[in-house]
Length: 191
Image (cartoon, rainbow, N blue to C red):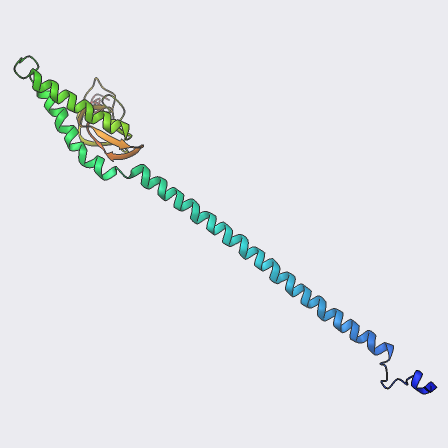
């Protein structure tokens, strides 16, 4: 082999060092721009993931609340329809002649039936609203009349026409009541 073969002559003309530096600066600048763009995309993707996770958690909470509410108030329509039966049993007991020995077994049967019904309602969180003597509360009471009564405080329930009921604290039926109204103030004609 000859020396020329051992030392091959460079056929390519290498770029000047100044040209390489300019290219490197341009490459670094474009790479930094690309890195910033990718970092922004990553930040956007993280933000979107967090928002999606938060929305999924909110949907899950709403669904759990809806299921809980459905379980809690599933008996609402049924309980409302049974209230007329409870009213009729109470009215029967109010007018029953307890002194009549012939009707005593019938009265006891109605009392037991009424007790059984109210026990069942209580077991399923249906509570009676009997506001006699309590202040009038429009959230739970329906005033059917107002009567002047100097012996009672104004806005006090004087009579309960029909008891109200709640289911787990939610009103099923408002109590129909007669409410005391304040006595009118007398005008002093001599003044």
